[in-house]
Length: 232
Image (cartoon, rainbow, N blue to C red; front, side):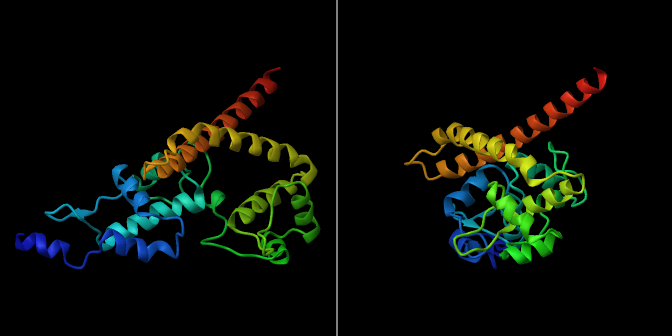
């Protein structure tokens, strides 16, 4: 190995070391998932002459960014790639959705809130949170805590209440979400091949891509219907 190549590889991490480093923050990460993200061009680790991956600090930071956007914003890789290429401008709308990152992620990192804390966080009465639970719009963990998804949902609903929208008006969203979730799983199932170590990562990515397209379709149909109604 040449001297420049040695200097590039020195201080880098193996794929197993990267896995151990990120496992606590991202419990679902696997070696297959890291390889899948590399195959998709989201990370480009150095290779030794014998073919082993070596990850620099920049590679690890890039990987953490990708995993964070998948976890906290539930973005498909196509959108994540666009965000990274554009410098991940936190004020720019997320491609294809018309929403900004803060609309997906009202709270940074993983959260664990009681009902009282959740109500205080979004400025709603606890009774409203209880109503949302009764309608299946948010739910607590078996330990009685609400996560960042519950926080994101209640934050949006909190904004809607300012327009006079009540929890009972939103039950249809739960029905649609259940139906769409089942359809997404059904479409993605063939990608999760049991003997293919990258199959689950591909299935997960397929679901994210489909979810993004479903959001776009719902938004486009709603906009079209409003335009048609204004011309009636």
